[in-house]
Image 1 (tube, helix red, strand yellow):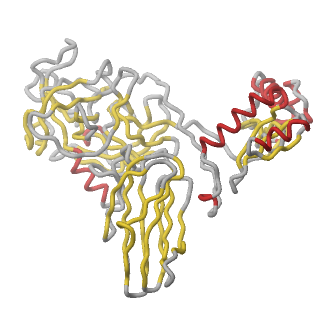
Image 2 (cartoon, helix red, strand yellow):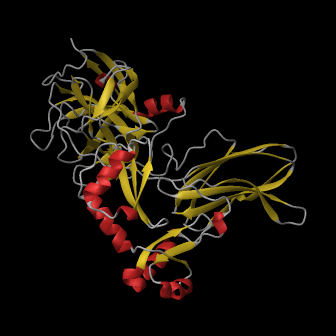
Image 3 (tube, rainbow, N blue to C red):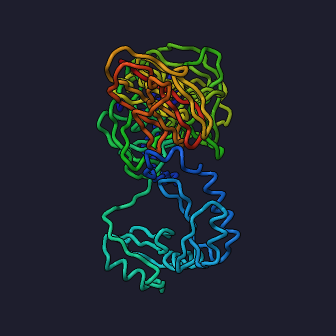
Length: 481
């Protein structure tokens, strides 16, 4: 019997996969954010993003048609371009540096609009307004094709710069719990994102089997699978897919994953799956450590609930109704959600903690809004000392509790794990004999996570955590000599 056969109507139904169903393409969220290089000295001189935006907005209004764009340099200087030399004084009074140019922002936008309304060859990969050069940049693998494209658009060629580029942009898609993915023949659901992919049910696919998203875009490969005895698997996704800390609630919103603290019997939990995608189906945990004897073999240690599920929901997410704690991976059950109520049904779930423990040995973790594995707000767990705290945008904190002292020479190693979407920086400082602090090591990428390794002599040290942009919880793990 096929390991994916659905035994609907039996006391226990395994493997809620969508068997031999034609996949329906769905739109996926494009998630492509470019990181901007930064200067190591910028943290004390640069305006905040909010201040720079305020300056740009103010001058766009006051300069009117002469405004030609604005940008922030790596050293923190805000430059505002203008076609009117007489507006230089106004720009300086606003705290920015003026630059006179030939074309206004409106003129460049009109040039780009002409390109937007012209069909481009596939070798022409992108075009955009570059305020710093006061031109529209066209990137293409073929310069000849780009020239033809510009000419066909009717745009002013003198306002366009063509740049030869070998890059091949592609759409990027989000991995979201509860949403559909496909193997060569069957459909299952994503449970939760992990770094480098997602976890799902073991009966959905064998190790090495390839997957595609609900939109039929190539997605990844099963990196490991266990069924029966267990019912878990993980898929290693390609660079077109971005893991997110989200579970689809099927009402236009998402449940955010905060961690993976196991819930007790009687706790309210909800299930998300790609077949029963009319809503988030909720109920209670009935038992823990249940055994289900599927026709393919027994599976042990499952979570039993009174929630309904249907074929194709296999692999989907079980999460607490409040608190965003990942609980399980949809395995199998009896009954159906077709009546819209799911009353009297039962569905079993593989606890997610088991597969997360396996993946942690590979240096991978559950993707949460706190940037680390559940249940805490961060990783960096392999360090001698771990500190967790909350920091607000623009502020500094000194850890641990001000400073620490070492009496030997050796390596100071640290890991900072912040939430997604923020820019936190990390500095190691040493106190001199006069009592002043000097920064001896810096990690200030435009990302939430940083790391430092510094070979230092005996003395008193501290870590400065700086929230350059954004607020939230962070974890600082560090080792001292």
